[in-house]
Length: 434
Ligand code: C2O
Ligand code: CU
Ligand code: CU
Image (cartoon, rainbow, N blue to C red; front, top):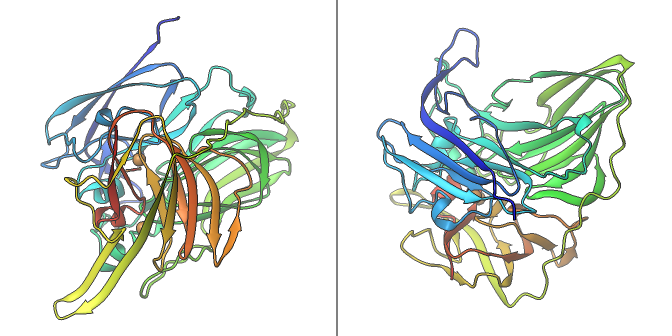
């Protein structure tokens, strides 16, 4: 067999200054000086070696490879902190079939939410050597992040409302910019990978003046393209689109309203944000090859050997000492020293995620991709419209989501709500794969 090619990189996490609003300096955290961090692109079959230098002032950090099938001890879990000032190397292989839209972000115990909202996150795209999507479409990552700025340009800390609902900022940025512009020719097709890299903002997205086709999800291409008018991306999720720009003029990517169950006052406006503006020329560009009708087969996971039930719930109560708030899975808050689930490597399991809370919680598990088989709400069962590899799925309030999951590599991993404030407040568990 051919020797794998080596992919090497270095990521330094450090304080930096961003200029987002005219005349104001915003102190942020950045990888290699930029937020989002550098786009990492490697190929299936590569051996990856990334040196992480933690230069954040007096805070431990890690780099977690969200969605990728990396060994547990290379996955930047909270039990493997990298101290301030220290370096470490993360090494792993990208197996055949792993092409997809992944990302990287910190995962230190108790500090993930803040390090992410201060700017630490980047995209990690694994490419296939035999990609069925025409190269003429390009391949562009759109990382959607959510920023809140104080009057002096600084990023304020979390409030009680942020802890309850997750932190929602006041401007959604695309690759660190506010409403960037893109120019295309009439008739162009563009491959866009959209990332919800916000801490807690649900993004219901729609294109005006252009037509969207879904070609992939978190873990890579789906079997066949599916046209879509709107897409709900919960925090942590990604979607891969081919967008057709057939009418000249302006096309815009914007948001629609989505009620994710807001606690208390001050629900931010979800609808009407313009994220990206595309200038479509009058004169047609070079003819683009058509999108193939089949992308890749996905073998369904089947015959689970074990089934598990995870109940997500929150407790909100006023008592003598103030507000008591808890985010729990099966009645327990996260404890790094406790093993919540023991799984066997290579065995398919059925996980039933039950949301008994008053707000939506996007469920995420490390180290593998899963297949959602059904959603149930008010006794009504519905199947997803297509088979897909996912590592994050929204579980709406009152809903149960059933998914099939198989971990291949031993070690301790996390599963949690990807509203990062909820993860931090306890909505996370430890899975030990043996
Ligand atoms: Cu992107 Cu444990 O998370
Ligand atoms: Cu993850
Ligand atoms: Cu949550």
